[in-house]
Length: 452
Ligand code: PFF
Ligand code: NA
Figure 1 (cartoon, rainbow, N blue to C red):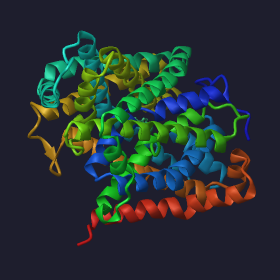
Figure 2: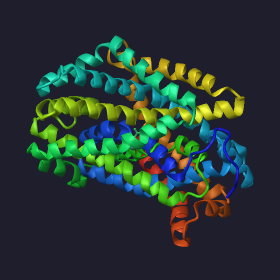
Figure 3: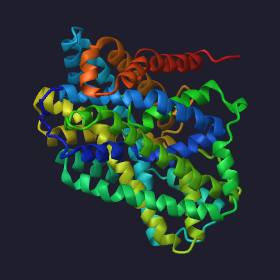
């Protein structure tokens, strides 16, 4: 273990690291994306593959990212090339970090648009305009929002500014404190919503939909989406967790910390699904409704429950905070790189990057209106960026990080940093060398060459 610290500073304690990394992991991926892709991919078998991916691929890769970052105490590009160099290999391993930064920029552009939808729904809940709304009207209201680029632009801009302000301020106490209060609160609200969902009469159906593992419904494409989502939801494959790891104190146990983060993230996703699907089924809505799933089902539920308006406001505020802490982490690797490599001021780097990602976001929000006929491989800009980042770029980044940690980094360094028992270390090492890269490669292969 080394005694270096990052020039960006470090987390006050290992709890702060867990908090910050959980803040990055728990976000729209859990509450918005997980339920809707589960709905689109037929439920149970998809959920099972997702859980296996988290355990066998996600958790071990997260451990690799954390230890590489913590060992080098630098941004992902320089961390990868430094650790490569001290292991006697080529500095060009740093290029994985470059692809990661690009992924972060592309993810931010649609993430911020969805963050904007959440902010808009806070407003709608506050004014009570959706009280008692029917599911058809809630669907129409969401459609009308998508068709209105000026409104989307305003909320996307607000979300981008909120994010840049925090990133510019550095590893800041404000966001740490906010996360500390908001994460448990989010959890409590999810439980309340879950309690409500249990009374709707659709709970058994929702439960079966998520946990009836019918493998005849599983396709390679669904497996790819499950695998890709396991990277997306844990913020892996792009250097975010590596950057956060570079600010971690050296006394913290990487294994336990990473397990805690993975467990929390998974729990939030499952609870979100169990809260949303019963509402969908009891109102006769379509589980495969896509990105609008949460924005259509929840206003209907809140519109019917006692104190629904209050809970609705709170719920969307918390989803907004979860999205916000994740968005911050999307920009952190690139900002750290610009500061460390080019000696830029943090504020300049944050604002500059913010303008770029905000601009890209405009193409995403236009996907539903003025840019709807611009398509890539049959997908609009929003769907295309979501698809290639989560399903291709993050898994590819993940393969390379695993191969790097398993084959390039000297075992002695990995052992030093990870501090695992011999057996667990061997399991981890095997996953880096074989399980994780092969799983990703197989799934990508079948995506490119679909089985007849
Ligand atoms: N993990 C976040 C979520 O589930 O919403 C999204 C994300 C954040 C992905 C940061 C990647 C990342 F680097
Ligand atoms: Na997540």
